[in-house]
Amino acid sequence: MSLKLGSITTIVISSSHVAKEALQTHDRALSSRTIPDDARSLDHHKHSIAWLPVSAPWRNLRKVCATQMFTAQRLDATQAVCRKKVQELVDYVHESCRSGSVVAIGQAAFTTVMNSVSNTLFSTDLARYQSDQSQDFNDLVYGVMEEVGTPNIADYFPVLRSVDPPQGIRKRITTIWEKMFSIFDGIIYERILAREKMMSKESRDLLDSLLNLDEENSSDQLNLTGIKHLLLVSTKISTSNDKLHNTYCHLL
Image 1: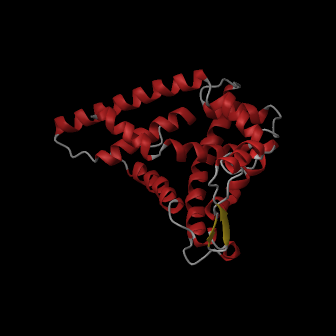
Image 2: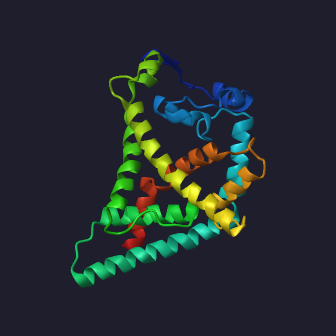
Image 3: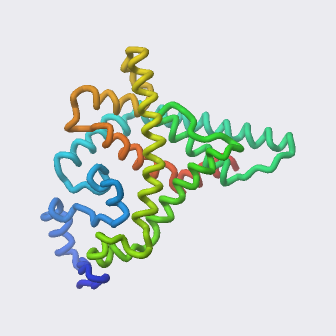
């Protein structure tokens, strides 16, 4: 069976035999994902493990994720960071209660999640309770979620990609990603200077590990551009609604 979505023909697999052919016999040929128009902003689809087809760059990124992001040591460190940041949230709520201050639970939860992520990635807090900085980054992350979740006419009529349809989704998400990349650039630049000053390549966090890969003449695996796109994916995933839900549960 097939569906016509705009000018895109979509094949619907409705039998076990065809499903076996697609998912087992021809899995490699059919494993790539359809790239939405917004993912083409800043050539994100050329650097992101989420959108690359099965190829040498994709395998390199998968190797980086397996050896640097999802190791037992890294995951254990993440749990410790999360516990620390949740405790900071509880302390902040208690202090606000004692002083009679109003607590914006949504903003406080986002600050906790954002700091858990940023400490895992960069060993630093990107947000502060009762700070406009938290709201600014909150707006960026939720801006990405809103734009990505909005149906884009260019995904159904690819001929419109070259002109960016009247919705302007790609233009808006490009602006958001440029702001996030600017933040990443500042953090990476400061870390490189600190490493040069200390003459140390100790891996304190994920960023150190990724910079070590870049400095070890492993440009075929990762470079600074790839690092920023990988951090972008990590930030989007880690600040999802599931993370916020878990923070609410800890608070309760």
